[in-house]
Length: 355
Image: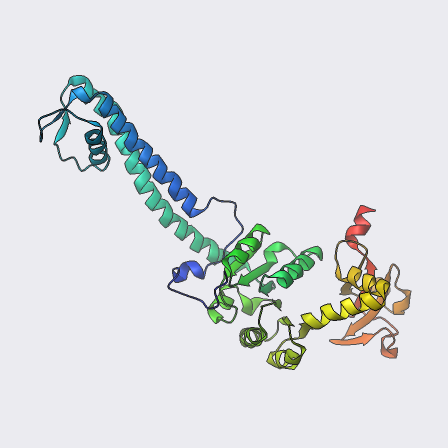
């Protein structure tokens, strides 16, 4: 999913790093490997125990003496691996019968386990490549979130709270831990640098509708925005910067909206200090799931021709017409038209459902 600043091909195969990590509850590869190694060891120990308990029925043709515990373990290993040096052999009828009906099936089970593990690894890689190709083929008009830190996670929660399906959200982060966190939230994710074009193409960014950039450094934000704009000229790009002085640079790089995180937090803290209730209202508007919420929606046919003040159950803050925002006091937005969009304040849909 500690963050890796650049894409390092030497750490993992290119094919694996460039494939999407889809949400899954399967056990990890290491856990499965340890489990199978333990099963193989148990089979070896089972044969060694059988031989040692019946050691008088075996002969050591090399030393011409009995079979001790170490030699029993040795016999088990060479038998399981079908090496068969022939220096230790069963000499009685019942020992040969036990080899035929017990030890031979155990040896076959060991080979099946060994071959099965290899085949499964290859099959998993093939299946993963097939799933990756199918997933990318069906993905379009989605949202790509570059950076899954605190801001990125809050943005995703807001998207989901406003009805965006999790299968239409793709996360890119340099941290494997954050990628796993995204998977736990049922999100598809890539581990890699958002400035790498191949990673962005694998996330089908050229077909994305929205791009949210919330990386930790402003210079990385600028480079990421430039790369995103080279691959997708029409997507709506929202970027976060830490220093307000970098805001013009991010806008010039191609971002449609730029959020200054430090200034926004500082302003909210100042308002909460000077006017506590004003700060509470703004925090309420920014928090989804309860109280008030801000939303943007299309004007309905029933609302055509009416004044924004006459909209029932909502307070219209602005009207978006021909991609231009007109605030509620603008005289050119006194009458709603079909095709307009309105930015409204309303009771949270979650709160309304509960009531």
